[in-house]
Amino acid sequence: PASGDRRLIAVQVLSVDEELSADDVVLAARPFRAREGRLHASTEVVFPKAQTVGDLRACLAARFQGLLVGAGNSAGSAAEGCDSDSISGAEANEQVQAAEDAVGEDCLEFVLLPAAGPPLTAKRCATLRWGDSQLNATDEATLAMSIAEVKDFRDGSVLVVRSRMSAKLASESEGCGTQEESMGGAEERSGSKRTTILPPKSKAGAMRPPLTSFPAQRERSLRIEVACPEDVREKK
Image 1: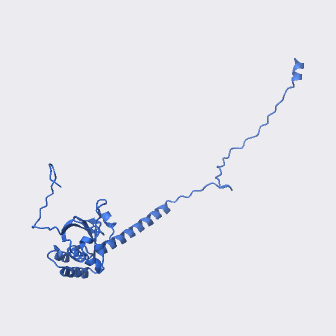
Image 2: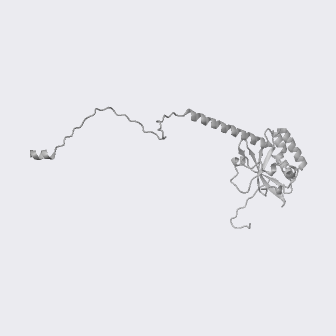
Image 3: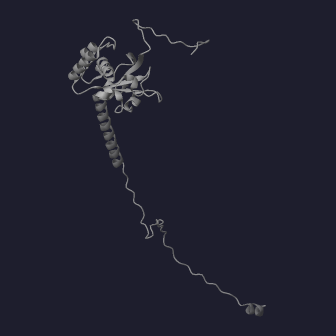
């Protein structure tokens, strides 16, 4: 947009000179620790649009392998500062393979945040569509495609990174906690159960009114005499 009076300008100070071409895109990568429920601040990463999905995953896995369950500090510091321009796809794949061997079956998962939606929080990260993300595919056709063809991929996109094993442990822990809460609630309800005796019902199913007893009283008789009109005239 054209400049104008009282317009705001954002200025970023870089530690080293950086040149971006029209074919480069900037992504905001946000590491997410699912087990602790923590979402870290964003880190800018620059990639060319022509880069493949496999090379993108390799570089990101080498840079954020500290998120892996069981990853040591030495392994994370060795891969810190991975640059897509200074490392080839073969070298990045070797680093990723070494990292995966160090932590066993764990691996990193990636998902691009849609353009529209509520603010990104740790709770929302757990509900993102991780299984449908093309960046987590393992088939050769998807790994060989350009990152520009990935759904929701655009300049300035937010990329969330998490550990698959950490997400699995978080899901299991949440399931156990929910089961314990339900059992505790059932025990409390059973302990405070009250016994109520209701009055008997009639055959029609309606509730009978409560019976009220009164003290016994002696019956009294009432005698009434009626005077004949003729007898009254004779007396007069």
